[in-house]
Image (cartoon, rainbow, N blue to C red; front, side, top):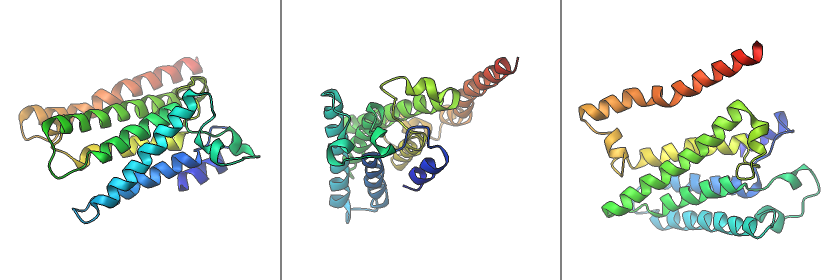
Length: 212
């Protein structure tokens, strides 16, 4: 919510985080805070289900041609009339809340693999949006799938999905990353360079071409 306010103040020309998106982040944050054993398990499931329903309803409204849940629930007459939950935001929220619904003390191997795949897919979508914001926000907003996905929303999901993966370090492919073997140790050392290296080289190349 703080990022939403700051973004509106310093970058009024770029897409703003919608109210439904901010609500989805609040629900996911409450689930992460309540991940403290069996006492709050039902409350966590309720919050996750509410976020899942929020994202599902918004996707259905977008598919039917409606501008989204915010415009159905509120009547905006200012700049907020242009803000809505982008399809990419809805999918990321859907994936994150689906992961939260899979939180249980005992889960089958299939559920654990599914959890890691959902979180990894969400991180990939959020990462694509972040790359678009880094290189050319205008071009990114020209794509309907990412069109209204604001930078604070992107950063929120870039932080949320790793938090979901780290919260279950022995589920799915995370067990390889956090393992004690030589391959796991090598993966932990090389993965940051494999992800950030190409981005840094592309950014430097683009900056050099713009200067020349």
